[in-house]
Image (cartoon, rainbow, N blue to C red; front, side, top):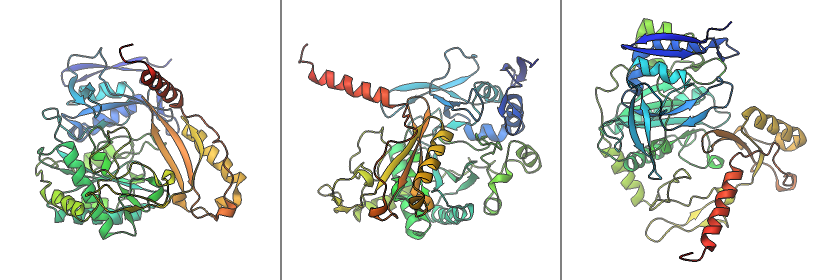
Length: 449
């Protein structure tokens, strides 16, 4: 019979681990206890990456292969030694979030199902001024690791030119991260503005392999995701285990090692020995925080040349000077006029996108894509790798997958007629419909009624 509970004595605290023999990575045969043992083996480095940072709990309570859910608020019933910090979201709402400052809390959140750790870019002592510029290199489908490294080299050069030190790590998924510590002297909006200027500069230097375009249908190569610096964004921290079949790790490395690495080499099973032999490559990441002055000067130059603020994530309020928050595939007409005094008239190509599948089950959505390809084999043969857009959509507390196909490389005469997605299971549809209905009722209600 499986052991139901195991007690750890850590940092002077007693931590209970429930169901330690539960398989968290069935294909690799990795249990919940082994996830804990991994994090304890790299605890100093893992805690360095999250210490004093509030974090969203991304809970895989049924293991890495099941859908997770997001929990912003710390559990009401929690041990008194679990630190919290109050984070304010763009909506103005706030939540008391867990802060992992020692090994006991690290095991506590793993026991909740947090296979990976998702901290904010701020410290608990100043929740409105980030101390980290986050450079997320996100490849479009079909882009291989060597091209990501080429873009990382350009990113390193730009960072050096603006006086910042970049600390690279594999993302543990398809892309890469480069973090730069900064003085906590700027707001989230200012840090994001600097990140956008950075992304555009990387694109200027390497236009064939890098992009700063927000809309997926406009991207190519490696997207430098500036919006990871918006107020409520979180990304996996150094040493986080990712929910892939091989239990891959987001591995922090020195630049020479990073530029020669294969991300597949870093897993829950291999990293503890590497850590024991070489220590934490990011051990001094906090020693030399930099400033954003040069990036903000670059942002001002871009604005003077007519470049508008790029789109924000959809749940943020419309920002002053922001470019139209409309995907090219949904744009009306051939162009969208810039606002007076902000920028020139923008010419945008309307992209022919079709949604072929929507489901909370990513495997089911991808199976729907394969059925669509089988039905339209002649069309599928004309698609480029980056014509298939697999979007991870965030709902109220979980994610779901939407699969779209860009028919830009398909002659109009061959484009298939519109058809319902299959599967067509958008879990947000019901509450969005209810929200619209409630809004219509409120608008129709007489004043004072």
